Amino acid sequence: QVQLVESGGGLVQAGGSLRLSCTASGFFFSIYDMSWYRQAAGKERELVASIDSRGLTTNYADSAKGRFTISRDNDRNIVYLKMDNLEPEDSAVYYCRTDIRFTTYWGPGTQVTVSS
Image 1 (cartoon, rainbow, N blue to C red):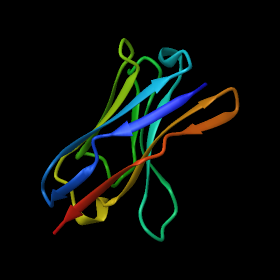
Image 2 (cartoon, rainbow, N blue to C red; image 1 turned 90 degrees about the horizontal axis):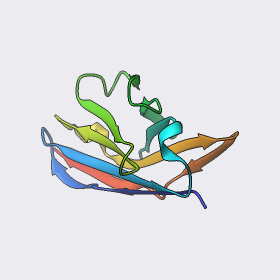
Image 3 (cartoon, one colour; image 1 turned 135 degrees about the vertical axis):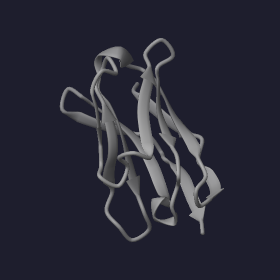
Image 4 (cartoon, rainbow, N blue to C red; image 1 turned 120 degrees about the vertical axis):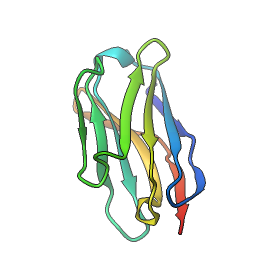
């Protein structure tokens, strides 16, 4: 079955960096677009970044532009989110997502906490 497992979250000081990973299994990873979302406490889940199946096209939320980089390794079935210059407002649970044949799949998420 489709599985997405995020890792790499943690506690970091403002201005620091983290690299999140999402390891996928149970589907043909290299033909599906992937995306990262986040949900802060008391807020709705929001799109952070997305990447097409071949890694040629990326899109970012305005809040992520210039600080975050999404990438993927289709040989290892992993999608990454490199986050630089983190701000306290980036604190949230970060989720990996893919859509396969009109079904949306999410990972369990990884917590990112940025201290000021």
